[in-house]
Image 1 (spheres, rainbow, N blue to C red):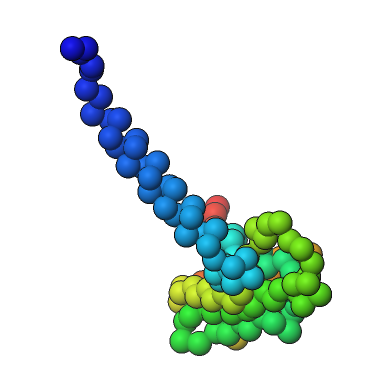
Image 2: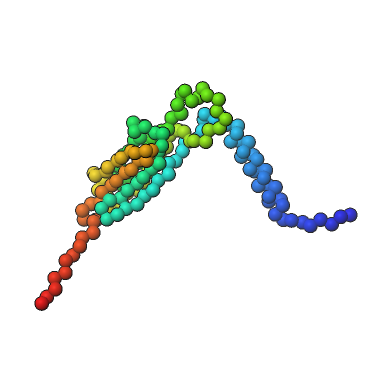
Length: 146
């Protein structure tokens, strides 16, 4: 009778392998044309005068974007559509996500919601929200007594 060492992690690795196989089978069973909606990446930064959001939304036309500011909430909705002529081609793999998306951002009270500037260049939606004048830093001049 041979003695074998018991490896407690062997069963965990086997379980993980079976779970990966199960999820891989489920994802391959889906039709490539019915992919889930996607969430565009966003960068948010600010300076003394404004708050800036940059969303990556390549392949989306301006008319398919909906930007709103209501009650301190900035919402960006849109949809990336799969072109009909591409559906006819014999795809081997579709990795780009298609469908609708929705992003919502709570705005700080320092932002002036009436002054929002939106630009769409090279697949990047840039939103600039100006800060209220009272929220912008002010420099105080010091008078030196002689």
